[in-house]
Amino acid sequence: MTGKRNTAINAAAREAGVAVTDMRDTKVLQKDGLIEVRFITEWMIYDCYIEQDTFEVLGFDYRPLPPDLQLTYIPESARSAS
Image (cartoon, rainbow, N blue to C red; front, side, top):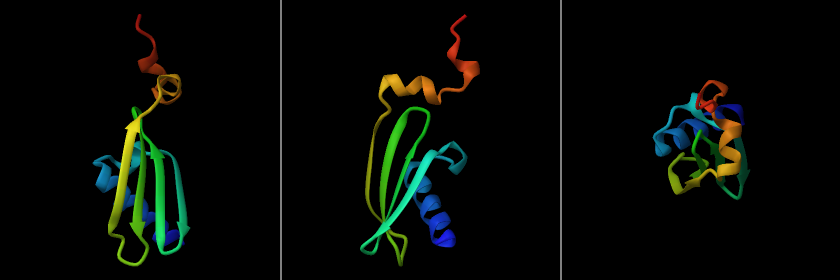
């Protein structure tokens, strides 16, 4: 699934409008002809549902990263306000 995994991750990144290098905690699940790609960026959580044969994005959802998790994903250099 490595080739399919990478293609699905790229399709999800393209749909979200983010660079693959900005994706964190990426999880790829495959079931019933669909590939689900879940990932986090600095400020958002994304779920992308992709058809496994055509890699067409069938569903896409995103929401803000909860404030208590934002500090976990912000680079150390950006955390200090002083």
